[in-house]
Length: 494
Image (cartoon, rainbow, N blue to C red; front, top):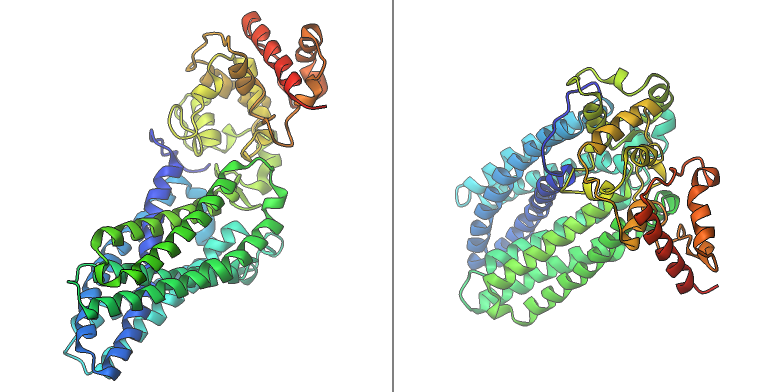
């Protein structure tokens, strides 16, 4: 909150996902591809297989262009974008892991230098020396993953670090080892997928059949390591340490996990197909397989990012940059006192720092449709009770007066046309907390209640819970909502 706010019209989550997922998809290939090149070169040299060596030379050109150009540039892009989106969290990661980053960057420099030398010394270095360069590349690249994995896993499961502040407690956190094994398996799997893309351009031949099937084996082995061995291990720790404590209606990580598993089976089915039609494996099928791999990785990252909500570093800093340890200070002194850069519009500044990191106005996770038809008092009540809403939102850490200022800012931008549809009224007024079909569904309480009783219930909402905003809907909305609640009561089995 001590930094200026970067306000752009699109969703931060989408922007980060596009850059990060593409970078990670390439960077994991940078590791697995290095292993594929050097292991396959050793086999080819030992067998005197010149056709495979020529294939590897073509693959290494593709490898260098993708990993060193796109991979390096997108890596810089990630640092640029996280510094803009959440400078407080970026600062925390740098301060706590400064030596970890320094070590990783050293490995990265070695990795880049070795990759360039490896590519440009085909037929210039003796086979033994050329393979030594390849092994130096792979080892440096994998050790880079070893370091980065500790920092990335820390953001999800900081473990004992929250109590000790010790570097090693944060680095070797609860999900470090399963995450490292999973990502190593992904590296091997992607090496096979990228090799299949290059092999697809070859004319039908016995060599193409051989190299396609060989690359399929890399994909299958990586799949087994990542999805069969590491994934259940990783998920078991997540379920025990995070998900079990979160609200049961967090639909995003559940959806992402389901998509991840579905795409995993689609990948293995595609690899089987590649094995069966190795001679006729073509570029279109290879691109489809690559797209499945990218989508699978995207689903995994979506799960990992969404399960962490409402934090950017679990238990330490919220997604909007507010530090958990300073919650009492924020609530006492107000959020505005923490802002070093202000525009003069307190409501807008509070909205940007407290809400805008996750919500847009009409795009990604939009607020306008969530509040259209309501009023300032209702919006203020929802803001004060943000921690109870579906989706694991952080608590509002400002003062009641600041909640009113945000409410005034939002109220000035919404459509005040009264809601006349009962289902819509429930969605806007009630569904933010009481999601139908979940443990927060209160439909059973409506069984047998007539319109007058339901009306009295709406009037007594603040008395039922201090966190529930008073009902402030119009007469038409009230009638529609009561009718809808009666219908819900009739549909529920006692």
